Length: 454
Image (cartoon, rainbow, N blue to C red):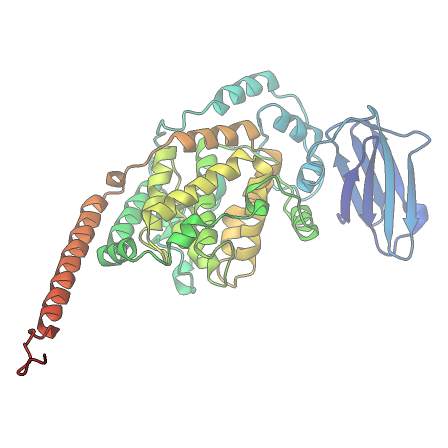
């Protein structure tokens, strides 16, 4: 069956679903309303929507087919007039099953992450009370408590990476492609520990003291970037464009079982930082090089990193922001993390807006589209059906409280800045002395006239 294009809107009393089905026979159209679900079929199309509230068929409900446009407008009455249905523009969440909708409503308990090719999900009750209680406890994260990864024995070719550490084999031949984001030597034969060690070594080799000091001293071009106010579309509760809604519809249908929820949220923070730093570095615009720039700054993409604490995530962001970017300035990185905080404060809709933009940028690249398959597609699904607004807002609070010191980055930045200031003061003194000497040389002694005129 084919999933048709559709859109959903509402007013105080009704829900309106527009379904686009080209060249169908009207006698094959079937509609079924069951509480919070609408089921539509018209060979070869099938659509099942699960709403946040219940709808009913009454005298105001109807379905109209426009043969010219191929659109069917379905009008349904809300069981409770005046009730507002949240997130009707998160189309992937509307496509979720009832069980998945309940998961989101109960702190994100999730089913196994299996891509649905066909058929239905087994909705049998498998100790749901126990799962709900475990999820309630798990969502109360201590963002500063590192969680050690269990490395174990690595079997040849068994390395896992990507969203929720669920992929392998995607980067087997990465070094034979023009992938300039990847820094992992052999992704499919690596461990989280070796990837982290190599990441830190690459950052240490990449950091340029002279570059950093020059940007610190001569920051006339950087200060406008630091002071720039990003648009409300970037930082506020957004409306989704038609293209973004279609992207959500085209995402793979998946149910989610996250093995390490904290790592998934921290990877989200890492990607939001890389995006925010790139956006701020170009006064709110993305460029043709943005896919590479974002990927290079993100430890998640460049080194397949899996973080275990918020501080660790932020320190890595500062390190890469000071080693791989066009503008390498501590205050610019601070502003980018402030942008991340605001985005998280606005909830998962604002985050989803960013990740849809990231997906668009990477999808359009001939090489880097692989990162959409490994990370961004799943993040876009998870943000609709698995992420918790409570958790992302707690992240915003922790980011506001977190104060990363320069010494944590490990490059003795305070000493470099002191050297710059001392050198600048010395140069200023030398320049002043040279000007004084030049002034003295140019002054001619005062002479009395040979003949005094009375």
